[in-house]
Image (cartoon, rainbow, N blue to C red; front, side):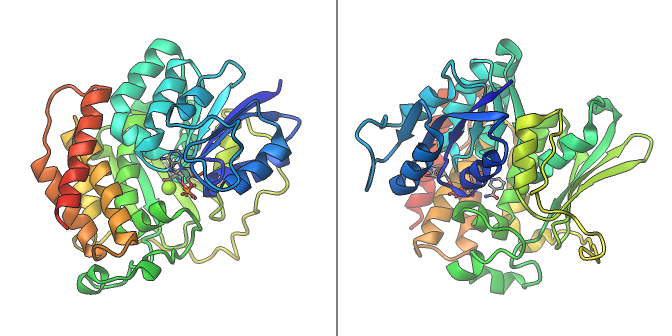
Amino acid sequence: MTKRIAILGSTGSIGRTALSVLERHRKRFAVSALTAHSNAALLAEQVAAWHPGFVGCVAGGDGANPEWRLGAGSLVEAATRDDVDIVLNAVVGVAGMDATLAALGAGKRVALANKESLVVAGELAAAACATSGGEIVPVDSEHSAILQCLGNRRVDAVRRLIITASGGPFREWDAARIHGATRDQALRHPTWSMGSKITVDSATLANKALEVIEAHFLFGLPYEKIEVVVHPQSIVHSMVEFVDGSVLAQVGVPSMELPILYALTHPERVPDEATPRFDPVAGSPLTFEHVRMDAFPALRLGIEAGRAGGAAPAVFNAANEAAVAMFLEGDIPFGGIAAAIEQALSVVQDNARPTRDSLMDADRRARAVVRGML
Ligand code: NAD
Ligand code: MG
């Protein structure tokens, strides 16, 4: 049966890759909704190719069709439509959170690229799944790898998850040099081509912290059982060690095509001749290193925020989003990103049981602290 997809953030890196994958599988999938924040000209091309029933362009802008729904509510509207089976959330940042929660609440599958949703509101997402039958299937390559390694085994068969990290462009730099890294240097990722926010997160390793928290909520494992190892080739996408000592890894060239397709078809696999093939000899050698925690404080801060729980992951995420935007604008040095996160985590504390509104309040306060540091 045709699965009907809503793509939130269709003009971004994941959104564009998703549409190119869907192009090869037009018999299996239809596109019911597309949303973007900007780049209305590209959105218009996508609309002409896919004829979705719903189009939302949050900020309008050049080339926007006046009939497209405008405003922040369009994401939630797109995510909860009756003619949508799967919501591919490829929005960047906490801006995607309400749509994730609403889609889960409406019983949909969420193919989740927008890891920030789950980092900020992991408990609320779990509650929405439990009451409405919605489900999250990760698009993030590491979590897709873990899901594929787990198969239908129960989490109590797992001894630990080993999440791989490329190490980013500053893997071998000393801490002082990393502090002064420029925008161009931070945007030059060695193995992946992605949107600018996640590319900076991959340079600070804040992305890996977000992924550890994402794994905690997705797979229900305590932080003690989630480890990070640096693997510069980005071929082993992650590993699962089981209680009997066996370790399974999922392997492939660095491409988001497979994780996107798998998030739509899980637990099935469908033939796809065009996804890049893996050649073990060309991929050799594969190497692994410890993470240099002292050189990448954002990773440590993020994992600590995850362990603290409550609103701390939301504070970590918001401070990081604000600081990355300021770094990209040239307002703070690269090393200022982790400093801003640390400051926000020490100032904004909220131990109450999180609600959507309390999390958004923590998000706002964290951003204010970071902007106030200028
Ligand atoms: P991107 O910046 O290339 O694209 C983001 C998309 O979201 C665009 O369509 C943009 O118009 C839209 N958008 C931005 N702000 C918005 C807002 N406030 N409201 C509504 N829409 C908005 O980002 P990306 O690299 O595609 O990443 C998207 C998400 O996927 C992020 O959460 C990222 O961490 C995750 N992810 C990306 C990759 C990758 O390879 N790019 C890999 C793993 C996970
Ligand atoms: Mg990832």
